[in-house]
View 1 (cartoon, rainbow, N blue to C red):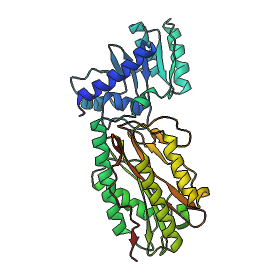
View 2 (view 1 turned 120 degrees about the vertical axis):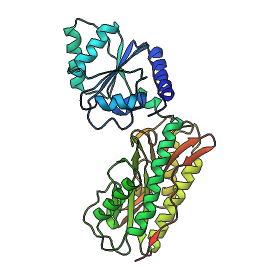
View 3 (view 1 turned 60 degrees about the horizontal axis):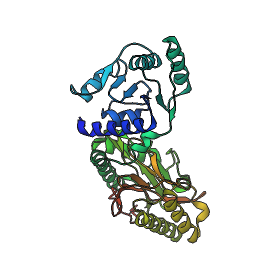
View 4 (view 1 turned 30 degrees about the vertical axis):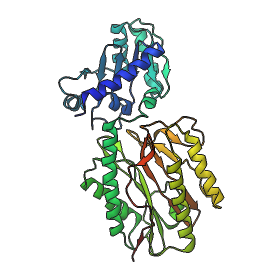
Length: 374
Protein backbone atom coordinates (compact mmCIF):
# COMPACT_ATOMS: atom_id res chain seq x y z
CA UNK A 1 0.00 0.00 0.00
CA UNK A 2 1.35 3.42 -0.92
CA UNK A 3 2.25 6.01 1.68
CA UNK A 4 -0.96 7.98 2.27
CA UNK A 5 1.06 11.19 2.74
CA UNK A 6 2.30 10.91 -0.85
CA UNK A 7 -1.23 10.73 -2.20
CA UNK A 8 -2.37 13.56 0.07
CA UNK A 9 0.33 15.69 -1.50
CA UNK A 10 -0.82 14.80 -5.00
CA UNK A 11 -4.43 15.66 -4.19
CA UNK A 12 -3.28 18.95 -2.63
CA UNK A 13 -1.40 19.86 -5.81
CA UNK A 14 -4.48 19.16 -7.89
CA UNK A 15 -6.68 21.19 -5.57
CA UNK A 16 -4.30 24.12 -5.89
CA UNK A 17 -4.78 23.93 -9.66
CA UNK A 18 -8.56 23.77 -9.19
CA UNK A 19 -8.52 26.84 -6.99
CA UNK A 20 -6.34 28.79 -9.41
CA UNK A 21 -8.72 27.95 -12.27
CA UNK A 22 -11.88 28.72 -10.33
CA UNK A 23 -13.22 25.16 -10.39
CA UNK A 24 -15.73 24.17 -7.71
CA UNK A 25 -15.24 20.49 -8.57
CA UNK A 26 -13.67 18.14 -11.10
CA UNK A 27 -14.80 14.91 -12.70
CA UNK A 28 -11.99 12.46 -13.51
CA UNK A 29 -12.18 9.21 -15.49
CA UNK A 30 -8.69 8.68 -16.94
CA UNK A 31 -7.26 5.57 -15.26
CA UNK A 32 -3.60 6.74 -15.01
CA UNK A 33 -4.75 9.98 -13.38
CA UNK A 34 -7.00 8.06 -10.97
CA UNK A 35 -4.14 5.71 -10.10
CA UNK A 36 -1.86 8.70 -9.42
CA UNK A 37 -4.35 10.48 -7.17
CA UNK A 38 -5.65 7.48 -5.23
CA UNK A 39 -2.46 5.42 -5.00
CA UNK A 40 -4.50 2.24 -5.57
CA UNK A 41 -1.87 -0.15 -6.91
CA UNK A 42 -2.74 -2.88 -9.43
CA UNK A 43 -6.44 -2.02 -9.29
CA UNK A 44 -6.97 -0.53 -12.75
CA UNK A 45 -7.16 -2.26 -16.10
CA UNK A 46 -8.09 -1.11 -19.60
CA UNK A 47 -11.77 -0.56 -18.86
CA UNK A 48 -13.21 2.90 -18.24
CA UNK A 49 -15.11 1.68 -15.22
CA UNK A 50 -14.49 4.37 -12.63
CA UNK A 51 -15.35 8.01 -11.95
CA UNK A 52 -13.90 10.36 -9.35
CA UNK A 53 -15.46 13.59 -8.10
CA UNK A 54 -13.12 16.04 -6.38
CA UNK A 55 -14.00 19.24 -4.50
CA UNK A 56 -12.01 21.48 -2.18
CA UNK A 57 -12.99 19.32 0.79
CA UNK A 58 -14.28 16.03 -0.56
CA UNK A 59 -13.14 12.99 -2.55
CA UNK A 60 -15.65 10.53 -4.04
CA UNK A 61 -14.94 7.44 -6.12
CA UNK A 62 -17.50 5.40 -8.04
CA UNK A 63 -16.74 1.92 -9.35
CA UNK A 64 -18.61 -1.38 -9.66
CA UNK A 65 -18.70 -4.74 -7.94
CA UNK A 66 -15.88 -6.16 -10.07
CA UNK A 67 -13.41 -3.70 -8.57
CA UNK A 68 -14.91 -2.50 -5.30
CA UNK A 69 -13.25 -5.08 -3.04
CA UNK A 70 -9.87 -4.44 -4.63
CA UNK A 71 -10.15 -0.71 -4.00
CA UNK A 72 -11.21 -1.31 -0.39
CA UNK A 73 -8.09 -3.45 0.09
CA UNK A 74 -5.74 -1.09 -1.72
CA UNK A 75 -6.92 2.16 -0.14
CA UNK A 76 -7.24 0.93 3.44
CA UNK A 77 -9.51 1.95 6.29
CA UNK A 78 -8.16 5.49 6.65
CA UNK A 79 -8.62 6.55 3.06
CA UNK A 80 -10.16 10.00 2.48
CA UNK A 81 -11.90 8.63 -0.62
CA UNK A 82 -15.61 7.83 -0.24
CA UNK A 83 -16.06 4.63 -2.23
CA UNK A 84 -19.31 3.32 -3.60
CA UNK A 85 -20.49 0.74 -6.12
CA UNK A 86 -24.04 1.90 -6.55
CA UNK A 87 -25.57 0.34 -9.67
CA UNK A 88 -26.06 3.54 -11.61
CA UNK A 89 -24.63 5.07 -14.77
CA UNK A 90 -21.42 7.04 -14.16
CA UNK A 91 -22.94 10.21 -15.62
CA UNK A 92 -25.99 9.96 -13.36
CA UNK A 93 -23.70 9.38 -10.38
CA UNK A 94 -21.62 12.44 -11.26
CA UNK A 95 -24.73 14.60 -11.76
CA UNK A 96 -25.93 13.67 -8.29
CA UNK A 97 -22.55 14.66 -6.80
CA UNK A 98 -22.81 18.03 -8.55
CA UNK A 99 -26.31 18.50 -7.17
CA UNK A 100 -25.34 17.58 -3.61
CA UNK A 101 -22.17 19.69 -3.58
CA UNK A 102 -23.90 22.69 -5.22
CA UNK A 103 -20.93 22.99 -7.56
CA UNK A 104 -21.42 25.29 -10.50
CA UNK A 105 -18.06 25.19 -12.29
CA UNK A 106 -17.19 21.52 -12.77
CA UNK A 107 -14.09 20.72 -14.80
CA UNK A 108 -13.94 17.55 -16.90
CA UNK A 109 -10.85 15.90 -18.30
CA UNK A 110 -10.59 16.11 -22.07
CA UNK A 111 -9.97 12.36 -22.12
CA UNK A 112 -13.64 11.54 -21.44
CA UNK A 113 -15.62 10.34 -24.44
CA UNK A 114 -18.41 12.38 -26.00
CA UNK A 115 -21.01 9.81 -24.93
CA UNK A 116 -20.19 10.45 -21.26
CA UNK A 117 -20.15 14.23 -21.77
CA UNK A 118 -23.52 14.21 -23.54
CA UNK A 119 -25.00 11.87 -20.94
CA UNK A 120 -23.79 14.10 -18.11
CA UNK A 121 -25.52 17.11 -19.66
CA UNK A 122 -28.73 15.08 -19.94
CA UNK A 123 -28.49 13.88 -16.34
CA UNK A 124 -27.94 17.43 -15.09
CA UNK A 125 -31.13 18.39 -16.85
CA UNK A 126 -32.91 15.49 -15.15
CA UNK A 127 -31.98 16.87 -11.72
CA UNK A 128 -32.62 20.50 -12.77
CA UNK A 129 -29.01 21.64 -12.27
CA UNK A 130 -27.16 24.19 -14.38
CA UNK A 131 -23.38 23.80 -14.35
CA UNK A 132 -20.54 25.11 -16.47
CA UNK A 133 -18.37 22.18 -17.65
CA UNK A 134 -14.95 23.45 -18.81
CA UNK A 135 -12.48 20.95 -20.20
CA UNK A 136 -9.11 20.33 -18.57
CA UNK A 137 -6.41 19.79 -21.16
CA UNK A 138 -3.88 17.27 -19.80
CA UNK A 139 -3.66 19.16 -16.52
CA UNK A 140 -3.10 16.10 -14.32
CA UNK A 141 -0.72 14.66 -16.92
CA UNK A 142 1.30 17.85 -16.50
CA UNK A 143 1.28 17.49 -12.71
CA UNK A 144 2.50 13.92 -13.17
CA UNK A 145 5.63 15.02 -15.06
CA UNK A 146 7.64 15.48 -11.84
CA UNK A 147 7.98 12.09 -10.23
CA UNK A 148 8.23 11.54 -6.48
CA UNK A 149 10.59 9.14 -4.75
CA UNK A 150 8.11 6.26 -4.71
CA UNK A 151 7.49 6.53 -8.43
CA UNK A 152 11.20 6.62 -9.19
CA UNK A 153 11.84 3.60 -6.96
CA UNK A 154 9.17 1.58 -8.77
CA UNK A 155 10.62 2.44 -12.18
CA UNK A 156 14.16 1.65 -11.06
CA UNK A 157 12.94 -1.77 -9.94
CA UNK A 158 11.10 -2.34 -13.22
CA UNK A 159 14.26 -1.47 -15.11
CA UNK A 160 16.37 -3.86 -13.03
CA UNK A 161 14.09 -6.65 -14.27
CA UNK A 162 14.41 -5.36 -17.84
CA UNK A 163 18.21 -5.26 -17.61
CA UNK A 164 18.33 -8.81 -16.25
CA UNK A 165 16.15 -9.94 -19.14
CA UNK A 166 18.64 -8.51 -21.64
CA UNK A 167 21.48 -10.57 -20.17
CA UNK A 168 19.27 -13.66 -20.24
CA UNK A 169 18.03 -13.24 -23.80
CA UNK A 170 21.53 -12.71 -25.18
CA UNK A 171 22.43 -16.16 -23.82
CA UNK A 172 19.22 -17.64 -25.22
CA UNK A 173 19.18 -16.45 -28.85
CA UNK A 174 20.41 -18.94 -31.45
CA UNK A 175 20.20 -19.08 -35.25
CA UNK A 176 17.02 -20.82 -36.39
CA UNK A 177 14.79 -19.35 -33.70
CA UNK A 178 11.85 -17.18 -34.74
CA UNK A 179 11.29 -13.64 -33.58
CA UNK A 180 8.18 -14.87 -31.78
CA UNK A 181 10.13 -17.53 -29.86
CA UNK A 182 12.56 -14.85 -28.66
CA UNK A 183 9.67 -12.58 -27.65
CA UNK A 184 7.98 -15.32 -25.62
CA UNK A 185 11.20 -16.22 -23.81
CA UNK A 186 11.98 -12.60 -23.02
CA UNK A 187 8.51 -11.87 -21.65
CA UNK A 188 8.32 -15.09 -19.62
CA UNK A 189 11.67 -14.33 -18.05
CA UNK A 190 10.54 -10.87 -16.95
CA UNK A 191 7.48 -12.37 -15.26
CA UNK A 192 9.67 -14.97 -13.56
CA UNK A 193 11.84 -12.16 -12.21
CA UNK A 194 8.91 -10.32 -10.63
CA UNK A 195 7.31 -8.20 -13.35
CA UNK A 196 3.53 -8.05 -12.91
CA UNK A 197 2.84 -6.69 -16.40
CA UNK A 198 4.49 -5.81 -19.68
CA UNK A 199 5.07 -2.15 -20.43
CA UNK A 200 3.89 -2.72 -24.01
CA UNK A 201 3.87 -5.41 -26.68
CA UNK A 202 7.51 -6.46 -27.08
CA UNK A 203 9.28 -5.63 -30.34
CA UNK A 204 11.70 -8.22 -31.70
CA UNK A 205 12.74 -7.18 -35.19
CA UNK A 206 15.51 -9.05 -37.01
CA UNK A 207 17.32 -8.33 -40.25
CA UNK A 208 15.23 -6.19 -42.62
CA UNK A 209 12.37 -6.11 -40.11
CA UNK A 210 14.59 -3.97 -37.89
CA UNK A 211 14.24 -1.14 -40.40
CA UNK A 212 10.62 -0.76 -39.23
CA UNK A 213 10.80 1.00 -35.83
CA UNK A 214 7.59 -0.61 -34.52
CA UNK A 215 7.80 -3.95 -36.32
CA UNK A 216 5.65 -6.76 -34.96
CA UNK A 217 7.53 -9.99 -34.17
CA UNK A 218 6.53 -12.91 -36.33
CA UNK A 219 7.76 -16.19 -37.78
CA UNK A 220 10.92 -14.82 -39.40
CA UNK A 221 13.87 -17.02 -38.50
CA UNK A 222 16.91 -15.18 -37.20
CA UNK A 223 20.15 -15.98 -38.98
CA UNK A 224 23.85 -15.29 -38.88
CA UNK A 225 24.59 -11.67 -39.75
CA UNK A 226 21.25 -10.31 -38.52
CA UNK A 227 21.01 -7.19 -36.44
CA UNK A 228 18.17 -7.80 -33.95
CA UNK A 229 16.34 -4.82 -32.46
CA UNK A 230 14.71 -5.59 -29.09
CA UNK A 231 12.41 -2.94 -27.58
CA UNK A 232 10.64 -4.04 -24.41
CA UNK A 233 9.94 -3.27 -20.78
CA UNK A 234 8.70 -4.70 -17.50
CA UNK A 235 5.72 -3.29 -15.64
CA UNK A 236 5.79 -3.14 -11.84
CA UNK A 237 2.97 -1.85 -9.62
CA UNK A 238 1.53 0.06 -12.63
CA UNK A 239 4.81 1.78 -13.53
CA UNK A 240 6.84 1.07 -16.64
CA UNK A 241 10.35 0.58 -17.89
CA UNK A 242 11.40 1.02 -21.51
CA UNK A 243 14.63 -0.10 -23.15
CA UNK A 244 15.91 -0.92 -26.62
CA UNK A 245 19.07 -2.79 -27.44
CA UNK A 246 20.30 -3.96 -30.83
CA UNK A 247 22.50 -7.04 -30.98
CA UNK A 248 24.22 -8.84 -33.84
CA UNK A 249 23.95 -12.57 -34.46
CA UNK A 250 27.54 -13.31 -35.31
CA UNK A 251 30.02 -10.72 -36.49
CA UNK A 252 28.67 -7.43 -37.90
CA UNK A 253 29.53 -6.08 -41.32
CA UNK A 254 31.50 -2.88 -41.61
CA UNK A 255 28.37 -0.82 -42.22
CA UNK A 256 26.45 -2.49 -39.41
CA UNK A 257 29.25 -1.59 -37.03
CA UNK A 258 29.44 1.95 -38.42
CA UNK A 259 25.69 2.56 -38.02
CA UNK A 260 25.72 1.08 -34.51
CA UNK A 261 28.59 3.35 -33.46
CA UNK A 262 26.77 6.43 -34.82
CA UNK A 263 23.58 5.60 -32.93
CA UNK A 264 25.54 4.96 -29.75
CA UNK A 265 27.40 8.27 -30.00
CA UNK A 266 24.14 10.16 -30.61
CA UNK A 267 22.46 8.48 -27.63
CA UNK A 268 25.36 9.43 -25.38
CA UNK A 269 25.65 12.98 -26.75
CA UNK A 270 21.95 13.64 -26.17
CA UNK A 271 22.12 12.21 -22.65
CA UNK A 272 25.03 14.53 -21.92
CA UNK A 273 23.23 17.55 -23.39
CA UNK A 274 20.03 17.00 -21.42
CA UNK A 275 19.95 19.34 -18.44
CA UNK A 276 17.15 20.59 -16.17
CA UNK A 277 15.13 23.21 -18.00
CA UNK A 278 16.23 22.15 -21.48
CA UNK A 279 13.55 22.28 -24.14
CA UNK A 280 12.46 18.90 -25.39
CA UNK A 281 12.67 19.96 -29.03
CA UNK A 282 16.28 21.10 -28.61
CA UNK A 283 17.48 17.66 -27.50
CA UNK A 284 15.53 16.04 -30.34
CA UNK A 285 17.00 18.48 -32.85
CA UNK A 286 20.50 17.68 -31.58
CA UNK A 287 19.94 14.02 -32.48
CA UNK A 288 18.59 14.99 -35.90
CA UNK A 289 21.63 17.18 -36.56
CA UNK A 290 24.18 14.58 -35.46
CA UNK A 291 22.63 11.76 -37.48
CA UNK A 292 22.38 14.08 -40.49
CA UNK A 293 26.03 15.06 -40.20
CA UNK A 294 26.91 11.37 -40.16
CA UNK A 295 25.15 10.95 -43.51
CA UNK A 296 22.02 9.12 -42.35
CA UNK A 297 19.58 11.97 -41.78
CA UNK A 298 16.84 10.55 -43.97
CA UNK A 299 16.81 7.35 -41.92
CA UNK A 300 15.77 8.86 -38.57
CA UNK A 301 12.22 10.21 -38.54
CA UNK A 302 10.70 9.50 -35.11
CA UNK A 303 10.97 11.52 -31.91
CA UNK A 304 14.06 11.09 -29.77
CA UNK A 305 12.21 10.34 -26.55
CA UNK A 306 9.13 10.45 -24.38
CA UNK A 307 8.14 10.56 -20.75
CA UNK A 308 7.54 7.30 -18.87
CA UNK A 309 5.53 6.64 -15.75
CA UNK A 310 2.02 5.32 -15.28
CA UNK A 311 1.80 5.50 -19.07
CA UNK A 312 4.47 4.27 -21.43
CA UNK A 313 4.17 7.49 -23.45
CA UNK A 314 3.49 10.62 -21.42
CA UNK A 315 4.86 14.13 -20.95
CA UNK A 316 7.52 15.41 -21.41
CA UNK A 317 8.85 14.62 -24.88
CA UNK A 318 12.13 14.94 -26.72
CA UNK A 319 10.32 15.78 -29.93
CA UNK A 320 10.42 18.32 -32.73
CA UNK A 321 7.25 20.14 -31.60
CA UNK A 322 7.66 19.92 -27.80
CA UNK A 323 8.31 23.47 -26.59
CA UNK A 324 8.09 22.57 -22.91
CA UNK A 325 11.05 22.43 -20.57
CA UNK A 326 12.16 19.18 -18.96
CA UNK A 327 12.26 19.73 -15.18
CA UNK A 328 14.10 17.98 -12.40
CA UNK A 329 12.16 14.82 -11.56
CA UNK A 330 10.95 14.13 -15.09
CA UNK A 331 11.53 10.60 -16.38
CA UNK A 332 12.22 10.40 -20.10
CA UNK A 333 13.72 8.13 -22.77
CA UNK A 334 16.66 8.74 -25.10
CA UNK A 335 16.26 6.53 -28.19
CA UNK A 336 17.91 7.54 -31.44
CA UNK A 337 17.85 5.11 -34.33
CA UNK A 338 18.87 4.58 -37.94
CA UNK A 339 16.69 2.41 -40.19
CA UNK A 340 17.88 1.26 -43.61
CA UNK A 341 14.86 -0.06 -45.57
CA UNK A 342 15.15 -3.69 -46.63
CA UNK A 343 18.43 -4.14 -44.79
CA UNK A 344 18.59 -3.54 -41.03
CA UNK A 345 17.94 -1.08 -38.25
CA UNK A 346 19.69 0.02 -35.07
CA UNK A 347 18.13 1.70 -32.03
CA UNK A 348 19.61 2.20 -28.57
CA UNK A 349 17.23 3.39 -25.87
CA UNK A 350 17.80 4.26 -22.24
CA UNK A 351 15.37 5.82 -19.83
CA UNK A 352 16.07 7.70 -16.66
CA UNK A 353 15.38 10.70 -14.49
CA UNK A 354 16.39 14.33 -14.85
CA UNK A 355 18.44 15.29 -11.80
CA UNK A 356 19.97 18.61 -10.77
CA UNK A 357 23.22 17.79 -12.58
CA UNK A 358 21.66 16.21 -15.66
CA UNK A 359 20.04 13.10 -17.08
CA UNK A 360 20.64 9.97 -15.00
CA UNK A 361 19.72 6.71 -16.77
CA UNK A 362 18.05 3.90 -14.86
CA UNK A 363 19.21 1.58 -17.65
CA UNK A 364 22.34 -0.39 -16.80
CA UNK A 365 22.68 -2.63 -19.87
CA UNK A 366 25.83 -2.07 -21.89
CA UNK A 367 26.07 0.29 -24.85
CA UNK A 368 28.70 -1.98 -26.39
CA UNK A 369 27.52 -3.94 -29.41
CA UNK A 370 26.77 -7.46 -28.16
CA UNK A 371 27.74 -10.04 -30.82
CA UNK A 372 26.06 -13.36 -30.09
CA UNK A 373 28.25 -16.34 -30.92
CA UNK A 374 26.82 -18.78 -33.43
